[in-house]
Image 1 (cartoon, rainbow, N blue to C red):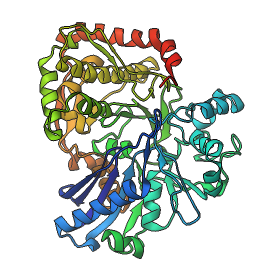
Image 2: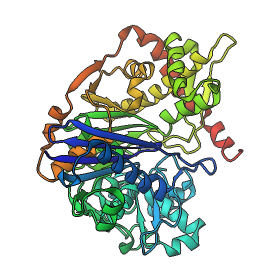
Image 3: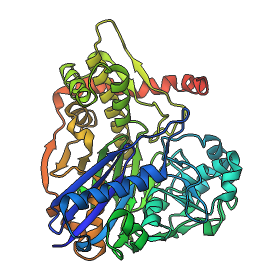
Image 4: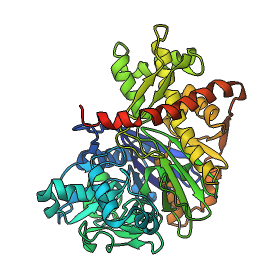
Length: 500
C-alpha cells in the first residue's frame, strides 16, 4: 500500500493526515497553538514551536497511531498560513517571531511609501496585485525601518511553508502561488523575482528558489528523519499556502470554480481563465503552470467566534460554549432582530483594504439577547463574504460553482446565512478536513500516483446548502445597511486609529 502525508499549519491549529492511494484517511492528528497579538494590528507565530514543533508532533502521532511503515510514504506535502514574513540567519535559525498575513497591519506606512515611490499603477501592472496588508514586501521594509539589527542579520526571508521545507530538506524554496503575494518583489508576467522596483528591500540571494507546487523541493534529511520519524530520502513537495491546498481538496479545478473557506478568516479562491487584475482582489499563478487564480479574504472570521466565546460565554466550558452559542443564534430570527455587525476587528482585507476599519455592532435595543448578537456576528461575516462575491460580479467574473470547506461549515447559521445573503448555493464534499488532505493529494500528484481530476473520486460531493429566497427581503436590507454603515463611519474609524 502507498501512503501520502499532508500537514497544514493554520492560524490556531496544525493538522496532519496520512492518506492511502484511494484517498482513504488512515490516521489524522491535530495540535493547537496561539496567534500572538503583541499590540493592536500585530499578529505573530513562533516558527520553531508553532510551525516546526507542530509538524513534528502531528507527524509522529499519525505514524504511531497508524502503525504504517514510514518507507511506504511516497511523498510529503505541507501547507501553512500565508503570506508570512520570517527572517532567518545564515544557519536558517529564526531571528524573530514570524509576521503573519493580512491580519498584521503594522506596515501601513511602508505601503504608502512604496506606492508613492514606485507608483500604485506600476505595482499593479507588474506584480498583479496592489500593495495591501497582505503583501510581504512592505513587511520586510518594516523590519528594515524598525528592527535594523535583525534586518542586518537576515540571510533569507521565508514564508511558513518555506521554513518547514527547509527543516525537512535543507533547501530554501517557495511556490509561485505563494511568491505572488510578495509584491513588489514578484513579476507575474515573468513568473520570477523582480528587484528593479524596490532594490532596497532585499538582495537576490535573500529569497527562496521558485518552484511549482508539485515540484519536488528535496528529500527528508537524516536530521529531519530523526525528529519526525519519516524515512530518510522521502520526497517533499514545494507545497503552498493553506487556502490553496484547501481549495484543491474540495475540487476547485476549472475556471469559475470558487472555494469559500470557513476558518479563522474567510478566504476565497476562484480559478480563472486568465489573470484578473483588480486592486480590490489578489491575483496569483495557480498551483500548476499556465493556470490562474483570483483570491479574496476577510481579516477576521472564525477568530471572532473565539473572541465572542472568550468574552461573553465565560460561564460555559470551552468545549460546550460553541454548541451553546450556536443554539442561541439559531433561535434568533434571520436578520438578528435588526442588528448589523461590521467584522473589522483587525482592519479589513478585501475588498476594502482598510487597516483602520473597526468592528461595529449597530442597532442595539433592550430586547436583544446574547443569541441575537452572536447571530449578528455570524451574519456580519456572511455580509463580508457577499461583498467579495459582489466584487467579482462587478468585474464580470461571477463565480460558477461554490465549494465550501472548513470548520465553520458545521455552524448552520453561519453557512446558511452566507448562501442566503450572497444568493449562491454552496457545495460540500464528503471530507472537509481541509488543507492537510489537499497536501496529501498534491503529494500523490507530484509522484505520479494521481491526476488532478482524481480529487472527485477521493472526495465526492455530499450535500448542497441552498440559498433560501424567503429570507431575501430581510437579508437584503441587512446587507444594504452593512455596506452603507462602513461608508458612513469610515472617516470616524480612521480618526480613532491609534487612540488605544
